[in-house]
Length: 519
Ligand code: NAP
Picture 1 (tube, rainbow, N blue to C red):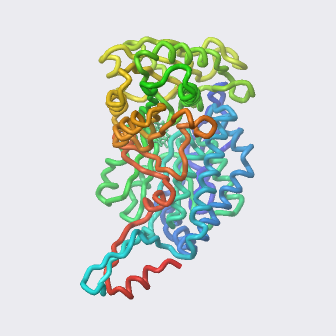
Picture 2 (cartoon, rainbow, N blue to C red; picture 1 turned 180 degrees about the horizontal axis):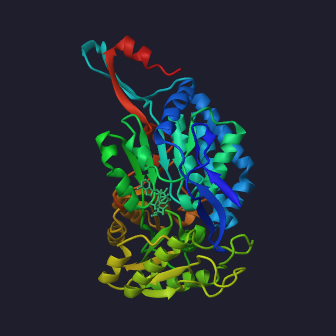
Picture 3 (cartoon, rainbow, N blue to C red; picture 1 turned 90 degrees about the vertical axis):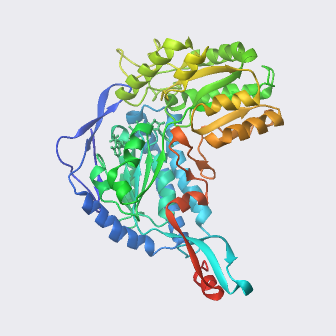
């Protein structure tokens, strides 16, 4: 039985009190024990604020980029071990595990490559100089400078590896030591990752800590130089961002939360269009990959009334052929939900939707499961619902069902109504539009953009090179307004800026230009 521990103040801690059992969601057996606590929050902060900050302050951007490259390499080297923990503790298939683990090393590598030529500098100039006097002797210039604090990375259960790496890449580049707080019940992969990073010796002293258990005491001790980057439910995000001490101390908080992502089938498309096949392929993948436990999974399918029957039939056929069961088996395409709580929440969401929408396919617990014995496992069936009236639309938009569930919302085929329906989700991480009409894509695209972090435009020409819509890319921003938390991460260099502070420097031309030169 694996035993996992917090890593703080440069050591793995023995914890205090009884360990918390971690479960294998396929067998419902205990797969590890997590030892929480056993240290003071002030000791964690003290170590990060002294050793960690000193380590990063002695490195310029290029050195930090080299650190990210090494982190990517060691995680990749231990990929198989990480995939194994993900299958055992997360219930992911091998493909789902790779999405998380390769996503982690890929994001670190992408940031390493982006910043490798940023030199020895520790600040990043923002925009051109502004002349402030006649004759241009007085100048203003903006620059992102290190905050001089620590980054607390609170992560959701569904991406223990990528969720850490996508935040840590930007934070470490920005010069902030990171303190990871993984979701407890799937922390086996995060703990394995911590063990790999620590034992490889790549992390400079104090730059990486990991806390298993509560971070309330730690958050209370943060100050204006620190940063909290939270990923999880809208509810917990609300608790974190309204924390009295974080508000009092003006601690910057970024929240990545829920999302009712939409896929719109354009009014111009018929069943014989290549673009329609892309829609089916993407929707099927986004409903079922990681058992629908992706913040970017598609929850709402906005379909012209004339195509509802076709879409329902085609999707049902694919979903009913899906092999569900033990995710360690190579022919299984969808494993269980990650925890018993997740299963209960998804079943409750299915029941709620079922009261007002027509269930086109899927059972709460699938009757056929490959390689699973005795009714065990937190399984849920891929389920498709059809919305028929205003009351059912209200239910669709009420809250995210974080599992393999999507609802078809019929519309009149116009870009205007498509945008209106997408925006009823009140803030999305991503939504995708499928059409061969440039006018439709333009009107609907700009119509939904104010409520989306990312808009994916797919036409028939995308066949062969389009990427999965739920794949978060290090080059593009991730985050969304409203329900999605109002946060922003990644987006190439933009992601690093969030972990820095922007200052306007004002002075004589020669002085400002010399001081802000990037070496
Ligand atoms: P959650 O229950 O909100 O927990 C998220 C994290 O917050 C966990 O590490 C949790 O730790 C911690 N936490 C709980 N209470 C806290 C408190 N009072 N103060 C500080 N931290 C606290 O979410 P989840 O169930 O893990 O994740 C599922 C949700 O995350 C879904 O709603 C999904 O949409 C969202 N999500 C969003 C994104 C995105 O990028 N927008 C990505 C992935 C997931 P414990 O586990 O120890 O309770």
